[in-house]
Image 1 (cartoon, rainbow, N blue to C red):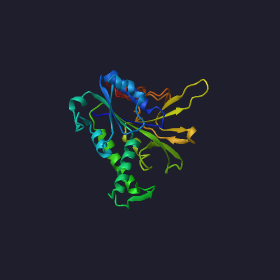
Image 2 (image 1 turned 90 degrees about the horizontal axis):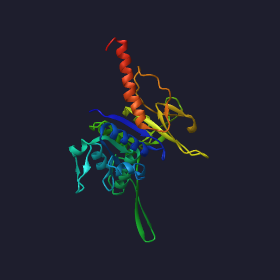
Image 3 (image 1 turned 45 degrees about the horizontal axis):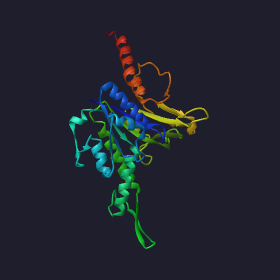
Image 4 (image 1 turned 60 degrees about the vertical axis):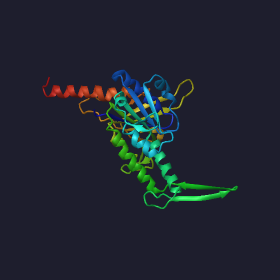
Length: 295
């Protein structure tokens, strides 16, 4: 099975975790399969707790695992057994219709933090000088360490390889989430909004790794009105972000009917997938068959 790959990115509180639940419900309704969420984020997963309680979503958290080991095992569909050992349970994996990884930024930050700690231990990664020093005061000694530019390259290369590895998982959907980064567009000279990995090098590259890349955003509540959560389809201009170009990727067939709107409000990632994948593909196939005189 070749998974449909999805990237959903947006700022904090835009509704990314909520959309994980929306997609999980869609997968359960249509395939009678569960969703497994691997998370390196520290903010929790409160919006999808009802799905967890109902057995629709399984959570695998990093906890005290090495971020390198956790990422490596997560993208290959491993889980911990009762003794805490990583195992690949093919029977359990057969019950999974969607794998979700939260988030690109969370995993990358964990790698960077681990490299900074290793620098403090005198372990050199990447060849550049380690950032480490001692602080003494109040009768205490403290070792401080940080990251150098080589660490960014190691984290970015690792994330690239492991995201691609995750897309081999045998499921209907593989989805990653990410926070948003505002960066310079070297082609147009303007600003772009894209997924945040770590640093800026991958912001404009990541969307092309996936079948579908969506940006989600939230407009604050106003008097008498609630928050508005918006899912953007494809590339778009965000006036509220200084006319920055929001990156998207919907890979819509040429013969599919034109979209009547480039947003879905309220945000609904399941609706977007059905519209772009199932309905658009079916319409394009019918149009091509008619043009070729095929039944």
